Image (tube, rainbow, N blue to C red; front, side):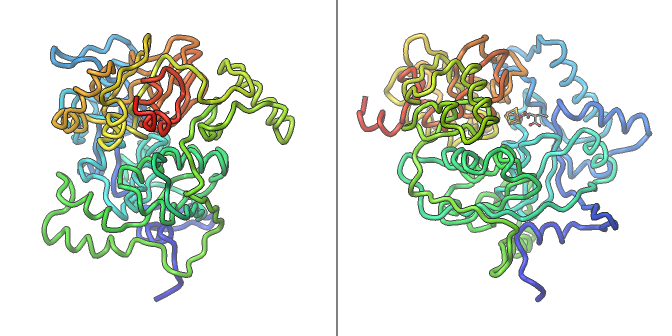
Length: 474
Ligand SMILES: CC(C)[C@H](C(=O)O)[C@@H](O)C(=O)O
Ligand code: SF4
């Protein structure tokens, strides 16, 4: 039977082609997702060297970062030159190289990390890459998924293999159950707040424990999505019934006997008893509350019940300087209760929180309420299919009646490569995954929150403990 192995070790071993003396390994890649930002030079490289895409059927392309989220019924116009060029290049390339592509007017279009799982392109046990750091999302399926650079995109397109050094095994074990009103997003913000943005460096993190296995597949994707913000190469969660049920019946997942055979294998995708991780971090779920970020790094995360930190409380000078810079940029004063920080913009969407379950959760808070005066709150479904399901359930009605702006699918204001952006100095409660300087537009100020917390902020006009809002019943 061999030694007990971690889930990561098993997937790695199953894809290993060869290892060189210096430890560099060649691994087979099962699934390659492609978007318009990191692929143009890769295709250009193939063209220059006269190579083909080795396995177009294992490749799936979609435009997401630059697509407009305004009404598409009268055609799609991308006004920004750079954005238009990237999307047009993708469209030319997929045609020339025979790569499956969901066009912008295809209902299946959306953020690449929402589309893959939704289509059953993402499968348990697979190696999955994309020229995008948030590829970690797909690890929720017990797959080894990570972001790669453009030159690696070219390598995978040409060979369906990748050169990699094996990462270390890290476990983040979340014991106990999440309290009512505390979500997967709060959990992952708390994890990053604890381990820091370098905490997972050099490792693949396997998330384990009751609170993780209690999560829906959507919640697990939210957690794995942000593994990269904790510095990790990828995030992973073991396969269980929920994984199998999610994958069954998807357009691109195996069918009938092939599914049954696959399921047998997928069920082996857990860490063996007695397997050893290089490092384990333990989080107690029952102590958590809703989290928000106050600064310009995802590790600047605190309970909504806390106050803005002071440079004086920092453990060292370096950290004190970082806090001071962040407070300056964010226009915040130390000691201010986090739930008193006013916001004028809200963004609900992205590959972190743009799935149907996220929209349902936000709609449950928005229902029967109105957004605060002067509030600009947008809801951007993660894909056209998410949007369709939401509309069938009447969520669009709930949002628009409450004064939210209901948009088309795309990355949108997660990183403001399209027209959706904050003005300088504007402050936003956002369900996305990065609060870096300028992330949502020049001099924009971002507070990362869950969909429930974002909806609550839209209603009250300030960062709000959603549990309080629901308790008040107003
Ligand atoms: C544009 C892309 C390369 C980038 C990433 O790699 O993550 C983007 O998706 C992001 O979220 O910052
Ligand atoms: S939604 Fe945001 S984080 Fe996700 S791929 Fe798009 S830009 Fe990157």
